Image 1: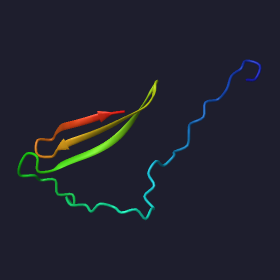
Image 2 (image 1 turned 60 degrees about the vertical axis):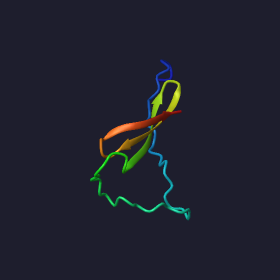
Image 3 (image 1 turned 45 degrees about the vertical axis):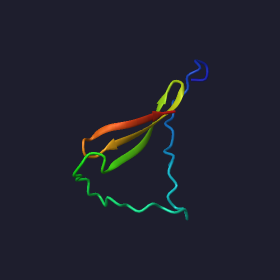
Length: 77
C-alpha cells in the first residue's frame, strides 16, 4: 500500500452538536404535542438544519404556519 500510495478511508465518529445538560432557562412547551390549530397565524413552528456543501456548511432556518402547513419564512447562512 505504501509503495502504491494507497490509503484507507475511515469513517468519522459521531459528534453530538447539542449540549442539553446546562443550567440555562428553557422555554416551556406550550403546545404539548397538540398540533391541531383552528386558524391561520395562530401557531407557528420553527426548526433549523444544516447541510454540508462543497463551500462548507449551509444553515437553514424555517418558520411554518401549522394551520396551512406552509413555510412562511426561511433564512440561509
